[in-house]
Image (cartoon, rainbow, N blue to C red; front, top):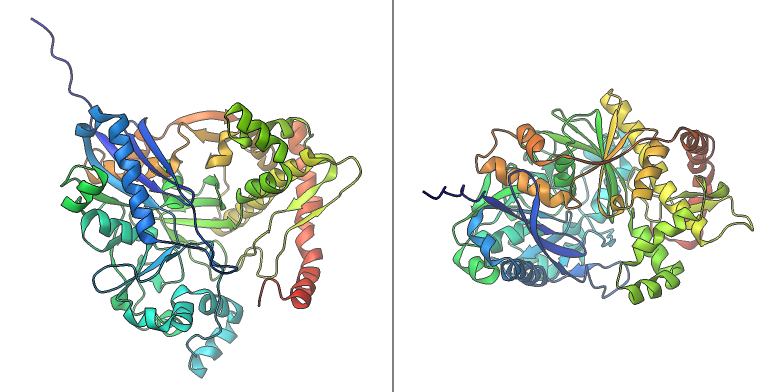
Length: 525
């Protein structure tokens, strides 16, 4: 008698709507990436300087194409899919009318518009803000908030805006027909109570500071809870089987942290993506800096304390565009990505880049490092080449994130004992080794480069009942990849450069940054 074959294991469809591509991926319940389809997209268009926009339907169409390509390439796997989850770029907002149609393009997180036409606070609230020294923070909130400048610059659009939501909520609506969003997707200038992980109560100051109304915001769902089921229309557009449950996952960074096992404050998770971040996870709300919130983690009632380097590994693209025409041409001839050849530049330059030290603040932050910050490179000499500059970029990003780690240790009152790294930059062994040496810590890369997709899949696995909680799912689905141990001689070099040079740069240069800003009015006040 022939022995029966065991049933094929259920698969989870994770959709990752990133800044530069959308990926449809199938993971098994052990966290293995079984199949993947990637659709590259144009991140945004700019009708004017500082604008970054993209059509909502453009994202939806490309999401559908990525899914359809997955089924076309792996037709036998479609029947094994048991659950779906979506992770999405964060802080990208879209205006919808009463029929759920986009009124104008989505505002992408890279948009840097401001307005001075925002709600005036009553005098007693202004006094309170002044007494706690947060006038500048309030100005940043009110001037940068999309709802404020949309209402000022596009009043006819804002008057017709029935729903003002994250891109993740719009795509969830297109998938299920229900306007809901994941709690861990709420990153941006909206009245959100981060500590209690819900929309702010009616007495909260932010309702007076912003022009958005509570009825314009979507229903929120905690991570791993259902957002809805795949609709008939979505099944037709994407090929995803109708009736499958779409589980809440959260923003891409939150999902990366979950996939890396960042669920306790002694583990720091670095994302070397377009925006570089360092996060620690916690079951209590710990502000990474005074008056800055911890974001919701991609697991219920948990938090991520995050320090951001705004332009992050965008700087690698900047270097490629401005200084790497040779590598770009050579990569085209070989049919490979130019970044693969950049490891050679790291091999051509020693630790410390022969004294070249870079401060990677090509885009200032609200609190870290400060609104007046600009980028800087010091230590140039006639020995320096493109290779040294590239190394200085990689080292400078690591220095900035190490500074963030020390801030998080201080806020958490817990020492970071290990690093987990994800994002595009983590695929380079040289960059991983530089990170281990700058931090002086054992540094791990998880088993897959698709960390945000894996985090989404973990949420679907918990929601579908395959694991009783997120900690159990992380243990089963995220496992250790290559490990990079610190090299003592290089650790000593980096430690001295960090403490004696990098850490002193900002205080000495910030008066010059302020002068540059006042003289040139760039970036605008």
